[in-house]
Image 1 (cartoon, rainbow, N blue to C red):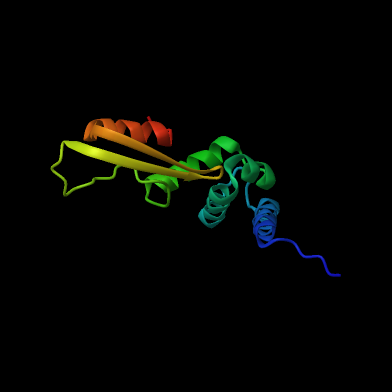
Image 2 (cartoon, rainbow, N blue to C red):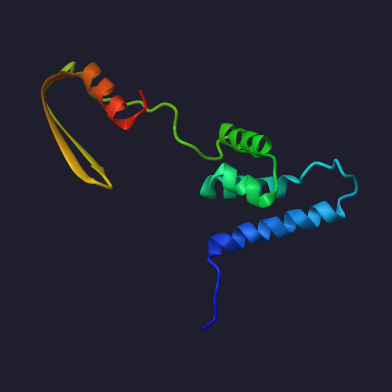
Length: 130
């Protein structure tokens, strides 16, 4: 039986090899890491987490985190910070049904007579964003 590694592990190993090769062949000990290598490290950090990636690639955690945040600020990834919902002029709902689906199952909440502001607060609280 031939053992193979997962593609995710190969990516991490490949980037680590490239970083090690760059470290051995750089002209000056304080040369900055090339942008292409940072981009690969950022992509791995998004997929596998900052700590795990920084540790595996022998990178400074704070430096990697700063590069991930900078990439997010440029529009590289991340969640939207603002979502606008348009088209409704209602201020109060007669009845509202909220369904939450998660690993443990589905929960259904029936809420009668709820103002839209209260609905927004409730959903933020349930989502853990509040």
